[in-house]
Amino acid sequence: MANTQGPEGNHDPAGSTQMFRAFVDDPQSRQQQQSASARGPRVGLIVGVIAVVAVIAVVAWLALK
Image (cartoon, rainbow, N blue to C red; front, side):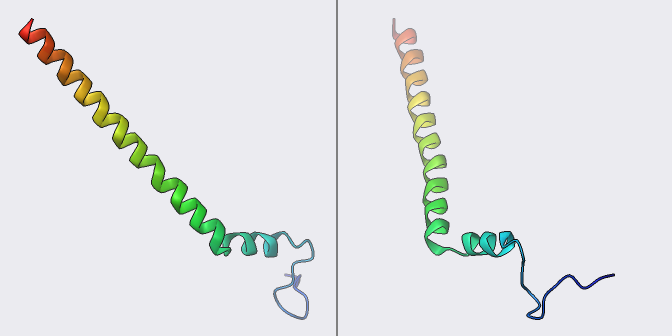
């Protein structure tokens, strides 16, 4: 098996691995991903609660009609 690494041991000639690691380790992008993913379930929960309240209101209206 050939040794494809340079003398430093972690040099990537294309730079893609190093750029990917810099992107993954960027705290600002990680914070943006966490805030975006936190908003998704909250919006779904709000829409679900509104739908349940609407269904209960319709059932109550039909029962009292």
